[in-house]
Image (cartoon, rainbow, N blue to C red):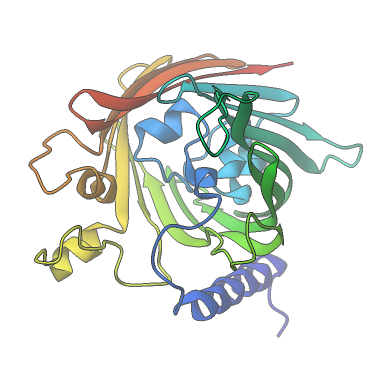
Length: 331
């Protein structure tokens, strides 16, 4: 008996993600190159724990988390996000979703970090010319929907540069989202940053920021709250690394290190408070000391049918955090 096309493509997606899991299960631990591609692109993602791959909304920048979410973006919709970076730097993101003549969904996206200008010196400390440093990403995405399942793929060129040196790579994201036909329930999965290096700072092979994620968003029937929960780094069990020789990390902590999530308070359909938590971020920012508010995030979103404006903050340390401001407009 012939299988429905949606079921067949969903099964192919699961097979692909499983293959990614096997291929990266032995990946080397530590910091990856181009790790900035994991920074939330807009305030909603930032407020709900940073990894948001299942929340269906009209925001074009959602496809940078999971290209399967592109199907829910409104046609001819532009979104811009901005965030101050420590010192004189600034982070920006922009995405535009549109349909072609055959009503197929596409999007283009950009994100970049400028760290400002730096004073150069020679080997003995004499001043030379100033130089810049930063990161940039350019992405093109496409998605299709068959019944209750949307599939998407995004191709990305990423680069990091400092002075006259640069490192560049080609990366690919694949993902899908299941939307329940009657209930407020979605389930998403995505493999991000599959690809290869084009150029490197040095001849040393660099580790690309591959990630494998699953997530769900749901609203209980009689509760004015929508929950979003995600799990990342599913290609390995040990999500946390000891920060000291004597530090021991329990199995419970390793499991919690994969998880992040948050909630949207839906008491009003135009003003949406948001709160989230990222356990791994909390542990990485603890520095061996108590850090009660590290990993906590919160924000507020104002929305209408064709316009959204949001602001959110993720805490690193009591006096240090990341603000992201974003807005989207429909044309």
